[in-house]
Amino acid sequence: MKVLVVGGGGREHAICWKLAQSPRVTELYCAPGNGGIAQVATCVPIAATDVEAMVRWAKEQAMDFVVVAPDDPLALGMVDALEAEGIRAFGPRKNAAIIEASKAFSKELMRKYHIPTAKYQTFTDEQAALAYIDREGAPIVVKADGLALGKGVTVAATAEEAKAAVRDMMEGGKFGASGRTVVIEECMTGPEVTVLAFADGKTVVPMLSSQDHKRAYDGNQGPNTGGMGAFCPSPNYTPEIAERCMREIFLPTMEAMRAEGRPFQGVLYFGLMLTPDGPKVVEYNARFGDPETQPLMMMLETDLMDIFEACVDGTLDRLTITWKPGAACCLVLASGGYPLSYQKGYPISGLDQVPEWATVFHAGTRLEDGVYTNQGGRVLGVTATGRDLADAVARAYEAARPIHWTDMHFRTDIGKVWVD
Ligand code: AMP
Ligand code: GLY
Image 1 (cartoon, rainbow, N blue to C red):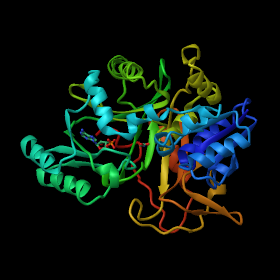
Image 2 (image 1 turned 120 degrees about the vertical axis):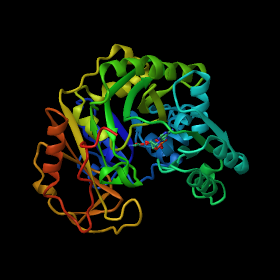
Image 3 (image 1 turned 90 degrees about the vertical axis):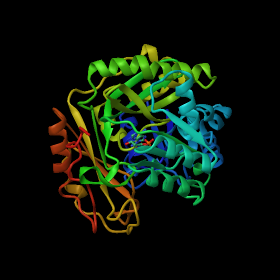
Image 4 (image 1 turned 45 degrees about the horizontal axis):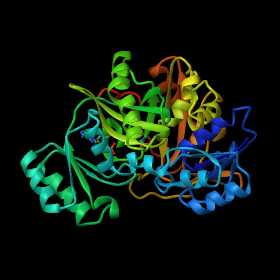
C-alpha cells in the first residue's frame, strides 16, 4: 500500500516509524515531514493545512490511504475532501473534528448527554462574562472557544486574573477569531490522565493511559507548552477507573456523536481529571496527542496499518489490539526560550551516540549537509521503554545524555511528578 501521513512533528515521526514496520506498507510518504521523518518516509513539501494541494498530490500519486494527524487540516475538512476523491483517509470528518475545534460544541455535547465535566457557561458578550466571574468567584477557568494550540486556557487563582484573561481574549484579539467566544468553567482538582482511543464510528478501543507535562519548567512551573514529555501507562489510571471511564465517558461520547449525526472515526483524545467526584472530561481532541503518541507507538504491538484500516472500515470490534508489558517515556528536548522566543539553526551533536534501544523522534529539525539543526520549539523526543515507569524514565534520560546543542532545554522531572 502507498500511504501518506499528513503533518511534520514528533507525533507524525512516531506514526511513520510504526507504519514503516508494517509489511503491508510498501511506500510511505509524509507531508511536510521533517529532518528525522526523512529516515523512514519520503517527505513531500506540502503544508499540512493546504487541503487542496494535499488532495491533488494524493490523487496524482495514487495514494491508497492517507492519515491526517494534526488538528488544523482535520478542522478544515481534509478527510472529507480526500473521501470525495475516493481516497481512504484515517481521521474524523469536519463535522466530527468539531469536538476539538469548538469548546462551546464539546461542552454542550457533554451537557446534553450527561457526560461528566466541569460546570460552565459560554459567552460572546464581554460584560456578561465579567459579571459571571464576579458571581462565581475564583479559582475559575477561562478558555478561548477555538483552536489555540493548547495555549488558550487560563486557570485563574483570582477573579482579577480571570477577568484580565477575558479582556485579553475578547478585546485584545490574542487568539483571533478563536477568542471571540469564551467558555468559563468551574476549576476541577485531581490528577490528570490522558486516554487516546481508536474509534471507527461505533466501537471505541482505548490505548494505554498516558500523561503529558504541559508546563515548561520543573515542578510544573512556567508557561504552558505543547508538551515537554510524556509517559504511558499512568499509575493513576487503575482498572476500576478505566472501567468507569469506559461506562461514563468513552462509550457515551461515541454514542452522542453518532446520535448527533457526527460519527467519530479516528483517534479520540480524552483529557481527563480524576476528581474527588470521579473522572471528568477536561478536553477532547480529535487526533493523536503530541508527545503522548511517541511512547504509545513504542508500546504498541499490533500493526498500526491494520488498526487504521479497521477504523476506516468500521471493523474495530473484530481486531485485537495488544501492548507490550512495562512502560515507555518520551523526554522532549526543546530550544532554549521555548515556548517564548528562541534561536533556530544550531547544529545538534551526539545523535549518533544514542543507544540503539532508544528512539529519537524528531519534532523540529532540518537535515542540511549531513547535520541536523534545531528548527522549532520542541526539537527532539527521546523515547525509551522499560520494565516499569521508573525504569523507562531512567532509560529515556540516559539515552538523551549524548545529545547537545546551544541553549538546549529540557525538564529534569518527566515521569517523576505524576501525582498532582
Ligand atoms: P485544555 O487546553 O482544555 O486541555 O486545558 C489546558 C490545561 O488547563 C489542562 O490540562 C488542565 O491542567 C487545565 N484545565 C483546563 N480546564 C480546567 C478545569 N476546568 N479545572 C482545572 N484545570 C483545568
Ligand atoms: N499533548 C497535548 C496535545 O496533544 O494536545
